[in-house]
Length: 419
Length: 94
Image 1 (cartoon, rainbow over the protein chains, first blue to last red):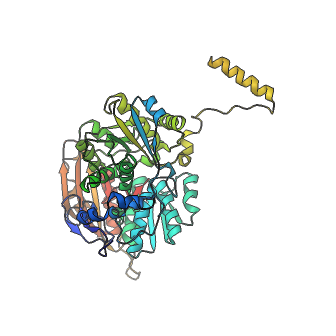
Image 2 (cartoon, each protein chain N blue to C red; image 1 turned 135 degrees about the horizontal axis):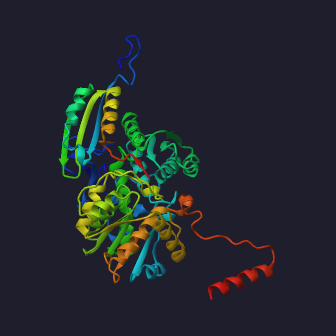
Image 3 (cartoon, rainbow over the protein chains, first blue to last red; image 1 turned 90 degrees about the vertical axis):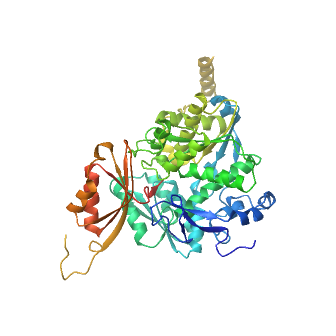
């Protein structure tokens, strides 16, 4: 590959005014505070990134490396991505749709959530820019992924978390040797302090000053869906929304493959899923608004509980452009979604997965996703991370003495009940 | 609060620039809150962008001042009912 120093990246570009900035660790336009995004040299990428070239590469998200924002070969998370796209016939039947696929990031490497995609990009770029310390503020999956990937890269990691976080989530970051700092206070205060820390210490704060690079990692999910679908864009993609970033990057990924001629242009819709207890984007979409109103989250889907979604405006725009819809589901519907996915397909998703399945069910029932069409559900994290949300809601064990007779009696009584 | 003359400058004394998004609920949209802010606290206010609809008012604001003054100004805004976010909006990710 004949590459310049910055690989296939051209500049950072403001999403609002289009002003360009050097490819440094910066994230906001100085003119209008708009978010910065990586712009690429697509003419050069077209020559380098053919289907044959992609097929010849290892099965990880880095097989699309020209479209990921690193100047040289990646150095962190080389095994991340290329998770299974599973044909979900049993769930399709339950939800009443002709064809359904699950993009299964519950088994993403190494920390079982799609965050490994964004973190491996952010840390690879952080090393290129000369950082030795990385950081993040998170309530779960991101913290785990930063801690694990930083450990494997030999980077020092600081992870900031609200002090009321469950012990399990803290252990999942501590075990990798990260500096885990718990912060007492209301969410808004913690949020502002983290922004101050990010601005002050000159670290690679993955979702702050590294955000333009970090968020690009999400596009790899779109590339994989297209390739694994036989180089087609699915008619419908249902995406969980926290900040709304993943949904916008799925759209960017689809459009980039169209631009590069890797996939034929086709009609498709991208739909958004939220929990009713934190649904600023879905409420705005259903009301036909192009802006959202901030909310105070109250839902078991903690990984989607962002009351002021940074990319909410852009997510609304993508749904409008692609004819997509949004909806939201209650805590009970989220648990039902988790159960349906587990019982039909053997995939145990965290609460965000329950949200996606629950919303897909609603969109199919309402005809917003027509029953004769095909859909992909993006399932972004593993159920082992949110066991608390389903304990007591997924059936009961039955106890017997060590006696065959007792076991047979139990089966017989159950058959009688089920008859 | 002014620091003692003999003490070293602390982070509280440093003049800093803070970039914020303010979100006004409908009932506050017509109030001159930024004017009030400039009179109540020793901060320089600089509006960089604004958008107002019937439902919400959004202002992109730069606040320059000593850390304590900026913190107090933000506290007053939130107490008044304005949602105050750093320029990055949600720094805490899931």
